[in-house]
Length: 244
Image (cartoon, rainbow, N blue to C red; front, side, top):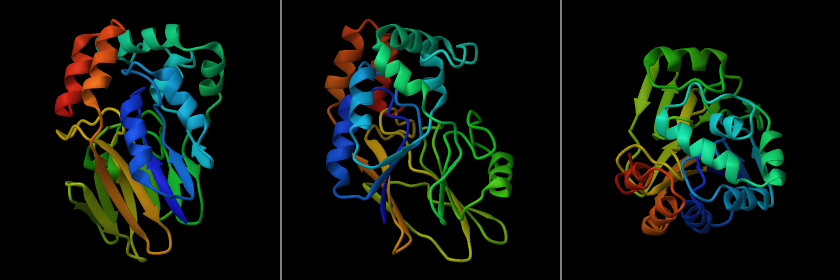
C-alpha cells in the first residue's frame, strides 16, 4: 500500500494541484485536516479533495471554525479575518460537507493512525518534549501522522525519544525500524512555516516501511495574487513567499 499524506492545505489551490501532480500513483490518500483558512480558494480545494478516488479524511481546527462547529476565540487577528471571509465565501453544500468530517485520531491499518493536532487532542500543537512524550503514550499504532504545526518533524521512540532530521531538501526519506514507534509531521501543503516556501507532503510505502517527506514548487505568485484580490490581509500573501 502506498499512502499520500496531505495536511494543512488551507485553501491554497495552486499548492494542492502541484502536490497532486508530483505525488504520482498512490493507493489511498490520508488528509489530516485544515482544508480551508488563509487561502483564497476554499470551494475549489474542497472539490479537489472530494474528488480523490480513495481517501480517509479528518477535520482541522480551521475546518471546524469555518463551519460553525467552533468559535474564533482561539484564533489570532489574521486567522480570524481569514476564517470569517472563508465562512462567508463557501457554498452551503461545501460547508455542510466540511462540517461532516470526523474528528481525529483515526486508525488506518495495523501500522498507521492519523490526527490533526495530536493523538490525545485534535487541537493541541505538538511542539515540545512533553507533548511528544504524551503523544507516544497514547498512540495506538507504530506510526502516528500529525499536522497542525505546518513544520515537518520526525520523532522516533524505542528506549527514549530521538529527533530525526529536521526534514530538509526535495526528498527526505525515513526507514521505519520494526522495533520503534514514530510520530511524524510531513509539513503543510498550503502554508509551510519552516522557511521553505515549497509545498510539503508525504508518501508512505507500507511494503518497504519507508516514509518520504517531499517538497514541490508551485505558483506562489498566483496564490498570492488571489489572496490580495479577495481582500484578505496582504501579510497572508507575503508569508507564502518566505515559508513563514
